[in-house]
Image (cartoon, rainbow, N blue to C red; front, side):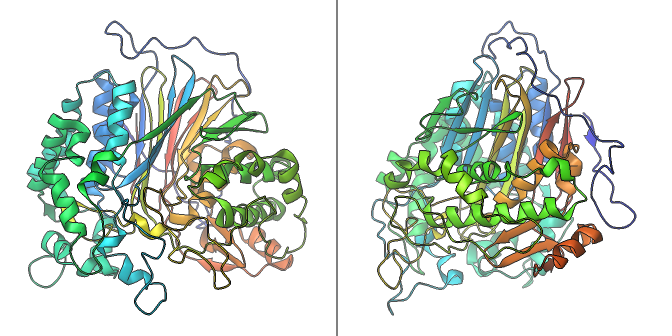
Length: 597
């Protein structure tokens, strides 16, 4: 098992990737369809590819690789990866959260959009986050409330994906996480930093203090060993009962009871847990035209096909952004040209303007997905970009939807991992408990999500204009999560897979990496290392320490007011096909991820 080192930082402190053409990986162009893999469920298959796992924590990546090494599929390995992440990275994801997954089946050539996003209880109302004074609740109060928790979907997603694409015994996929829970795991540098140096509401909840406090009025530190036998017991329950653990029985009952605790108790019931279902739609990657409603979305970009999850995920907004950017010669300009970075800034602004106003889990938006990606509409948006001078922040485009802009806060307590197995199947999965440590309320050794705070707290504007992302019973809150799988022009050969945590900034992080690998020909690691640029409305945040000075100065000369930031909370993980047909990976140095081959 090889743990690949991260690409080193240039001596100047800039991480721009390959310079000029020296050392740049040549991306494969459209290639003939390789022979399809045999069915991963057949007992007589022989592995044909070198497996790879990229995840935010070494223990999780290695647990996934162990499953692949014994012949498991990417769906099998995803269970092992997620259950370890939920233990060792509780600030980001867990058994009580939700997720989106893209799954590529190498045998059928199909891609499946799995939606394991949490849902609001049936009793939820549009004014659920309106206080007694008639004003929206303060986010810091809402985030730790019983009202914040949605019906969890991540484990239901993994249950369904493994049933449909796995070949291993389900119970065998929990052993790594069970061992770490029972025998103890080491507090990582990043987790230790949250516990010691960052203040947030969840940190003051009784469950959080009982689990992560040091018993002396402080909190655990980097290097401490933590045992979580309750988590181990919960995993053993999942191993025996699969997703039924979250539908009935003591753990499900404890979830409902915990959400009914003060302050601000919620309205979740056992019926909400019992009736939750994962949404899944399957399509061929080359189906890049026609009706986008209710299926994974795939679009052409340059000589590639790029696929992501449909609404309420952020994938549809990300893909709209790519189509807007396609009008600009970004590859011709190159990574060192301020014009290329201006194209990124303006693409993001247009992408967010439309997304913030229109994207939501509503029948109205679903009926307009084709209009959202219509070539004529996108051309009109792209034509607003004026290269060489600062552009004013754009408004949303005009679609046949009478809704108002939503300014929902969406923190970055999220993680992403990518898996390619020996049969050529690929998983790209983003998973979350929403804010750091969810609500700070625990059941069975895991934190409950605070995902419902991704809804708009107000159902309408002051003048009565409805907001699409308002609360409703059974509705998924809008998400920025956007797992990506890239194919060649035929839609039959995987070129790359990538994704990131980061709240609303996920779309920016992913867009940057896609520019890096598809337009600038960078290796995945170098594309991840590029400076993060998050441009939304009048705010343009750039990691100045990673940005080439000439590019920064060029943008300022155009008239942009840039906000320097020292560290964006991206956690990009991805894989990229090499000229020899093998895959290499990259993991974000801003977190603690690894590539395991």
